[in-house]
Length: 458
Ligand SMILES: *Cc1c(COP(=O)(O)O)cnc(C)c1O
Ligand code: SF4
Image (cartoon, rainbow, N blue to C red; front, side, top):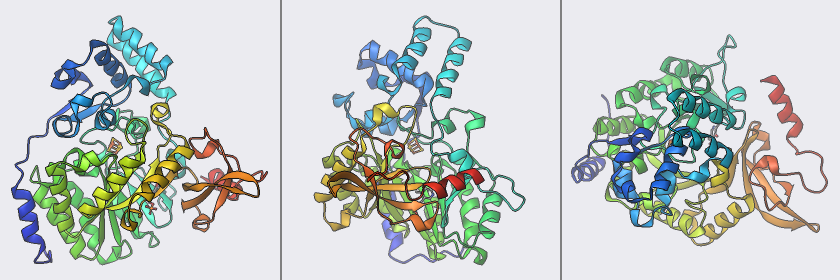
């Protein structure tokens, strides 16, 4: 090992890790709902509703989230309860009734499974043509599973061992990956495939490991993917990003649990080898950052030289309030996390329950921005990860007497689209890009023909 560690980082790491004795990782799924102690105090009806919803949508929560993050005196309104526990409104009434009727009648397993499969089929697991349009190909034209290459600089990689999370977010659009439907899965087990692709694509500067949560992986697996990137042939890959919610859902991953020490050394080696290493940390609420372990984990990761950037979606019932975002960004800045993105929630099965109109999303973003200093204003958004690109709502204004949304691409399938303002007719109800119409009587978006041609080619 050739780790060059700055002399100051060692004592910090030791200090942070010695204060927390890791707890064993204990997790509950749909089958274990009855064993979650604080749930016993809820009305039977509400527990039945959870059972119905979690038959369809993935449910998984660990003891740390239950004990440290949820304020049970505020259930069901507690934001972390909403973030992790199933709620009746997450299913359309018709879907809910179909499954509830079977469960209430004690229908046999096959009947329930068939109904559940049918409901899942009617939900939309892969928004934005994710399956079709972004799957890169090798030099023989074969599709490479487990990868997406949508924006020139950045390749997304889904390590197959990272297709789960320490707890599941109730709104998560990745649910198709968790419910074991083979056909719907986007995953890869091949470090070799990734490395070959990166070798062949010198235009790629960033690789983003995502999931699920790659931090559920053993460090030695992560190392197989990451360490080879230090070789001179991958010099063009300057940035290694790892998307994770483990800093929130299981901070002990960084504090002595399992192979935490090896993970810290791996991050240090990547940094020492000249890479920019960024944990793209998913946070929805400042409460996730208030616990001792959460703050110690942040400190410890930062001591490796890796940067933590905070991002997360705006979700009704969880964080649709400017005060929550302002405090989240302020807390992040205080802990040395760089606020990065506020996302608009994309099309998921449970979307109606969680969705926030675009105009409201923009108001929340604006009001939160106005409450923080410049260091908190590095978060861009509200941003929709739509098929043509990441589209940011810059604001609502009036141009030549017409009320409009001002939009811009933060990322585009064609880099030329990025940073060009464009306009949509104001629409109070719209919750996604496809609900919007071009303003000023235009027939089409400026990017529409080009995008259609890309679609036809894929
Ligand atoms: C967001 C995203 C990226 C990264 O975009 P940045 O603006 O560089 O953070 C890359 N690929 C896909 C598919 C994305 O959605
Ligand atoms: S941590 Fe991310 S991938 Fe995992 S359930 Fe939450 S949103 Fe989905």
